[in-house]
Length: 248
Length: 271
Ligand SMILES: Nc1ncnc2c1ncn2[C@@H]1O[C@H](COP(=O)(O)OP(=O)(O)OP(=O)(O)O)[C@@H](O)[C@H]1O
Ligand SMILES: [Mg+2]
Image (tube, rainbow over all chains, first blue to last red; front, side, top):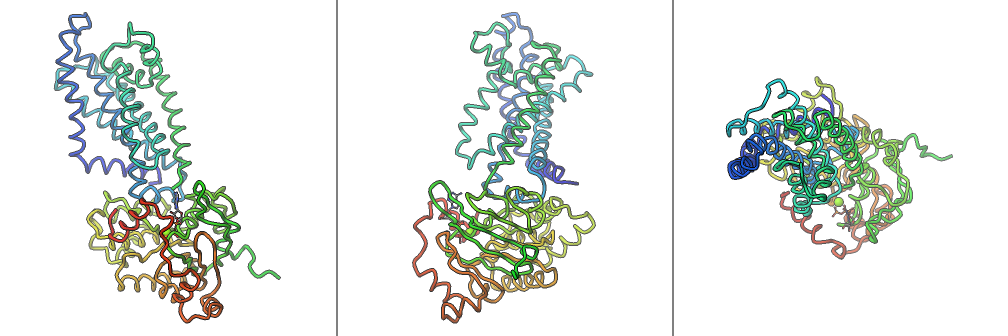
C-alpha cells in the first residue's frame, strides 16, 4: 500500500464506521422523492412529461452524490481544524498523491451513497430502462463524485475554518443542484437559466445519468461523457494545485 | 579553517524572517545545528519557535531567508526534505476516528516502512509509550496525555535523521516525561539522530541539550552550549539564565483570542 491507497482507505473506513451518518443523509433524497416525486407527478403528467418519478430519480441520485462528494472534499477543513492535515502534509508523499487519495476515497464513498439512493428509488417505483446500461450509469456516478470531491477539496484548501461553510452551501452547492436539470427538463428555459444550466457541469452529469438509466437525454450520452470527463480532469488538476499550496 | 562544513550540518538557517501581514513573528534569525546534536530552541510563549519549526518542516514559506534541512532546501526540495525528518507537533495531529494502531500504521505507510518492519516497530513503540493494550481503541477515547504519548510514538516510527519535537512533554506526567527523555537520548546516541526540540521545562532542556538557542519576540537572543550560556549570564541554572535574558513579564501582547483558546485547549487536553 502507498500514500494514495492509505488516504483512500481512511475515507472508506470512516464511511463504514459512520453508518448512522450514512442512513441520516438518506433523509434528504427521501424527502425529495416523496414530496416532489409524488407532489409534482400529477402536473408533470398533465403537461405531457410522462412519469415524473422516472424523470426525478436520476436527479435525486445525482443530488446525493453531489452533497456527499462536496462534503467529503470539504473535510479538508475539518482535518485542518483537528490538526490531522499537518500529519499528511509533512509526510514524504507528494501532495498530489495525498490529494488524489483523498479525492478517490471521497468519490468512492459518494458513489456508494449514490448506489444506496438508487436502491431507494427502486423502492419508490423507479425502474431503469435497461440493465446493461446500468454499468454506464455507475461510470457517470463515479465521474460526478470525483468532480465534486475535487471541487470541494479545491474550495476547502483555500479556507481556514468552517465559517465559510454556509457560503459554500448557499452559493455553490445549492445553485449547482437547482440549476442542473435534476428537478426539471432543460428544454424551453428562459435565456439566463438556459445559459446557467449549460455552464453547470452537474447538468451533464445528471443528463448522462438520466440517459443511461432511462434512455432520456438532452445532450446525448457521448457529449455528456466527454464534457464531464474533461471538466472532472480539469477540476481535479485545480484541486491538486490548490491543495499543494496549503500553508498551516 | 572553517570547522562547520555544510556536510556535517543537520540544519542551517540564515537571516530567516517570517511576517504574518504586518506582524513579524520571526525576525532575521540565523543558527546552525550540527549532525547528531540535541538542540533546544527555547523562548517564551509567542516567541516564534513553532513558526520556525513550521518553516523548517515545509509547512510555511519564509518571507525572507535561506534554510537547509539535511542539506535540502525545504522550499524547493520539499519531498527530499520531508523524507529526512520526523516531527511531533505542538498541537494535536491525530485522527480521532481511527484507532491508535491505525494512526501508527497510517504513518508507517506514508513513510514507506516495509510491511514486515511495520508491525514490529508499531508494537515496540506502542509498548514503549504504554499504549499497546489500548491499540484497538479509538483515539477519541484517549486522555490528553495518552494522545501525546501516541504522537511521540508515531513520530519515531520511521527513524528519521532529524526529529523535531515541539513541546513533546506538554501535558505529560513526570514519570512519562523522564521515560521519554531517556528514550530521546538513546535515539540520539544509538541512531545518531539529530534532535531539535522546544520545551518550557528548563531543567529538562538543561539536562538533555548539547546546544541551546533562546528566542524572544522573533529575535534570537543567544546561542551556544549550556555551559557557555551560564558563564556568559553569570547564572547557575538554565532557568535563571532564561529569565535573565527574557525578563519576567508575561507575553500576552500579541496573543489573539484564537491563540488563547488554543493554549487553554492544550492545557486541558481538549481539541
Ligand atoms: N498563522 C498565523 N497568523 C498570524 N499570526 C501568527 C500565526 N501563527 C503564529 N502567529 C503569531 O506569531 C507569533 C509566534 O508564534 P509561535 O507559534 O511561533 O510561538 P511559539 O514560540 O511557538 O510560542 P508557544 O511557546 O506559545 O508555543 C505569535 O505572536 C503568534 O500569535
Ligand atoms: Mg509553539
